[in-house]
Image 1 (cartoon, rainbow, N blue to C red):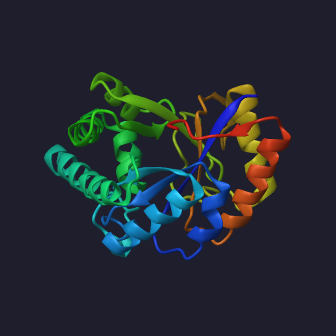
Image 2 (image 1 turned 30 degrees about the vertical axis):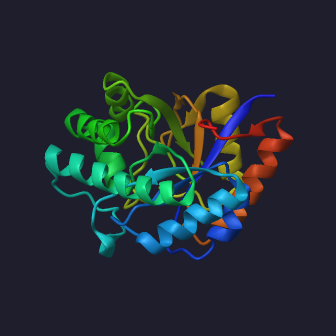
Length: 248
């Protein structure tokens, strides 16, 4: 039975983490940058431990007003520091909770910036490696971030999105553009199955883009997050996939 990982960004204050946690295999926990604090990190770690879900750090730009989703100028030194410090914070809290942190996935604008900028990608990867070289770096399939991770000696995982559309170059459609978000669960399921079974995604211009799908992201802050997770999980199981963390 083929395996696939289903991940979700949690600990961000959306209010439905308890409903989402049993439906996923990996949780990306906000580390106090774009969202979260030590109390929410402890709570999310405890919930993940209870449900047997693998955990990872989800560092982002320190911009709570924009939820870390607005790109801004950031030096490689600044990016390295924020990734390292936020990941280290979760590592420390997880150690006290008896939970092992397995991966790191940057959030929002930081994720997108590192996906295309090799200098910032290297800064992210080096921050992760300095925190713990055993950590797996999660990044956009085919991106600069994954290249930088491998160059630094990290294991990497290619991520695809159930609820986002793609452009012809394999990048995500920016959120500010119309059609960036997929709001129909059936369409999200169809996109995921196409990526898993055919290794391709249909871009917004109608082209078929090759893509490597090793972990599937569902955003935990959307109003339909729980519905999406339930329908996607059911569809994956019906299609013969086992939902299992890539890092377990």
